[in-house]
Image (cartoon, rainbow, N blue to C red):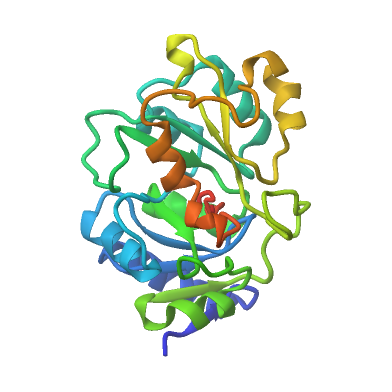
Length: 271
């Protein structure tokens, strides 16, 4: 049975973080707290680790995980283009419960699954997650649960589902305490996922998954006129794949997007 490290105890925090860093470096999986739900994390740049994450959850490559980042500079490094509206949203809601789908830098040496050239990014608002991200770099993070099961809000809940598939569990108390459960399902603490891939061609932002950041709050930042109508057409090519992936849409049956994250999430992360 994999050990759970209580991050409220200094000695366990130091040990758990050290082991988590090592596990990520070896391509193993770590469960970590985010501000939304607990996330299942892997090195985003190690394809075998990402596949291990998908296998642990019981998901296929058609559902690639979101990526959690330690800060806005990493957003610019991973996204091919960051529209002004996205910068405004990030300034308002990062770190926090907003995941943004963007076109990925084509030069990135990673394999997250069938992304169609997109990536879902989130900066979580949790000190443990941010500390680990600052040391490991971007992490592929999906909600810490089996596909079709509720998202974990503690490391113990995650361990009951994922068991020895995870090398290190970091426990930091119940997640999601800073948000109202206003997502798509009762009690849903998922991150909100916004698809911004159409902005570069004059399209609209599309809410790919309703979560803890409401449409009203998004509109306060970018204006209602920039948001696609609820249930409207896809925001741009590749949005379907990104939505299924990031939105952790088996999420429809499961998560609180995480970790992310989100996250995870989402995520992100649902992270």
